[in-house]
Image (cartoon, rainbow, N blue to C red):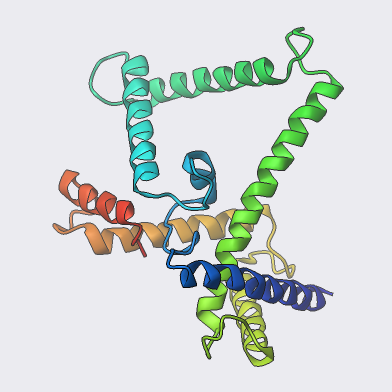
Length: 244
């Protein structure tokens, strides 16, 4: 059953790859850049700061993102750094997180508590779920677009802008092999699937691998962290959209 599902999923992805490839090729032919090419930011970040809705962050949007992040960090430090030592210790972090949870709850009530009774009734919760589902759909759409273009670049060996039968078969095999490798590496209880704990372990390992890649590339003095100059070099490459 799992293998059948994998083949079906891969076939759907192949069709999606070809469909989005046509759009991507049309954009390039018109002299523009793919909305998906070379963007190093997460879909959630893109949705938040993509003011012109083109599916990527241009220089102005990246600048706006960096400014917003810096301003939030500075405001957070100013508000919660009780001992004024220029950083948040564990107690200050805890206080900040508690206040931020309460602020998010208040924002939710302000947005969805139509009858202003201080709680969400079933119809108000339904409205909240509908909004969350719409946001999730937008995220999924962007992820699929980016994945489609990425897969095309990996498997379109004859560079005709679509995946033929042989290229689709190669992609399906690669996806199956990768899935098998992940299962072998992280299926701790050997039940043939990854549960929530095992997937969390996989994500943690992926983050650690990425962290080590960043250190290897930018930690010029090899002290195991990025100092101000090294962090600036990393940010500059992020800014250019060329981070690998």
